[in-house]
Image (tube, rainbow, N blue to C red; front, side, top):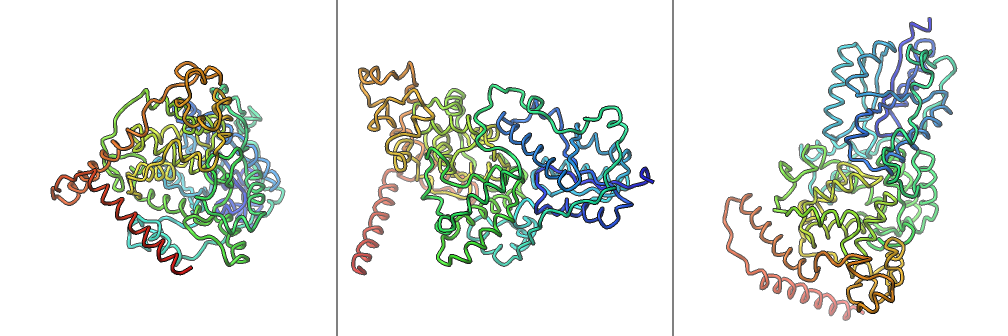
Length: 541
């Protein structure tokens, strides 16, 4: 009788959790309803080939390995386990469908072009083998397809428009973890397991991490248990939650000033819908709370905004062929790109951020703003696609839609167009860390520099540099550019690029703009507006 059982497969990709996992719950419920008919095999497909070509750093491979081990433990508590199947999905599924006598395959939908192509191929294979496929949208709060449909077939291209659309949508129900499976639905060993009992075991760290020397401190362990623990800790101070405003957090604090839930959301160790529900419960108890886009709910909705925009643009991660993205003539400077990526620009604040990223796999969102602006329109005039690739390798929370969306925003290529607002690689960091403690931690060669010049070590005399134990050009690099000069030149470049893009879009040639005069006029108008508002405020007082 056991050989005649049909198998129900849930295919984990993202969504590495048992809570609020509708695709997993579906097969558990089906097996519990007919335990004499079905066996359950939750799987994760690991393609050994991607270890060589995929741009994933050692820290993120470790996070995945820890997440898979944790998922296996959680499934075992539900009287199941995780089966790691090695190979390409299109190669392994035909054999699995036959060998396991599969009736149903479930998985969570994905908007990434590679994933969509892969999933379509697997669905075709399943149809050819008589296997039913059910998919569920649970990686985001809202289904991007529904959001686009409610916006008359187009993705909202502003955050406020997005909010106006989703506020009319019904929130999906957040599910608990599925009920424990009864004894008897566990599958019997297949021919591969008979020959090798550990054939479907989770990978070891050595098997996933090809360059162990690149592993940094394990500051943010992977897995659903750690995700839920971190969520509980983050939300324990309800006043902090209710008053949270992202711009008021510090990009250079020695310990994170935000939740660091993003890696767990990226891998699906934590449900975005659960986080949203928990936040809403707190905000109901605190009527006077911060609002999107700066609130914690607002941070979740930024994720939803980018996912929706990316869902209808397969070229979302590149400039060419991207309906959202302005065409900008970036320059190629491999030497400057390498200096930026490895924290050797000569700007201590920028270098500290990039070194933290390489060591720990995470940096504050405002720190990402600073280094992204520096690489692109602020200082180095290098394409956002190059920065995106570095982040893709190093970030624990690297997410196709969010990574590309944020890089377009910060380079003023899409969604944000105030290109004249440039982050200073000196002044921005000083606002929240005047003494330079963050720099001393991540750029230790500057540890003896005093607060007065640690952000600008070039201001120290050679004698002082020797006294501080760090001579520029020997122990720490000279500045690769002069921000005071290049950021002004780059604003002119952006102005010219915007003009060309407008002309292409409208088909009308524009008059040449006197950049210095126009910027002076704009500044004067802003100052006049500010003075008016300040005078009005004084009269009210």
